[in-house]
Length: 108
Image (tube, rainbow, N blue to C red; front, side, top):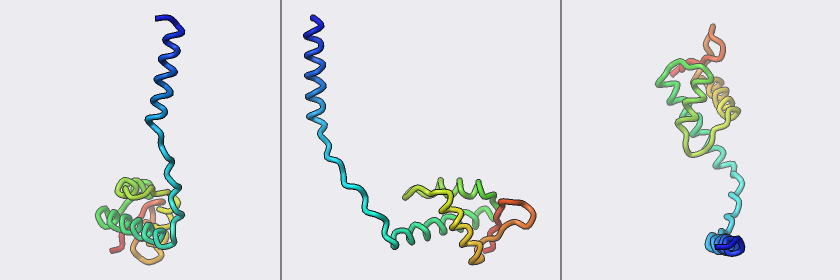
């Protein structure tokens, strides 16, 4: 086989494979509605409360890691987790440890 024949076969293969894999891009997802944001917030808070109820005392990092591992429906961002923890502390579900920094206690 000569170099010219190999090049022809490669280009023929390349062009036929690109035709067989034609893919129409999917439309971008719709922006989150306030309702779905509220559902995610409640889901995140429920996961935090479940974890704290089971463990009673956890460091911030351990809590965030465990909640992130639990939630598979959406990606959990650290800042959202922190906000949820703050809200749960304000509402009395959790409290900060008196002597250990960055440690939470379940108040159940």
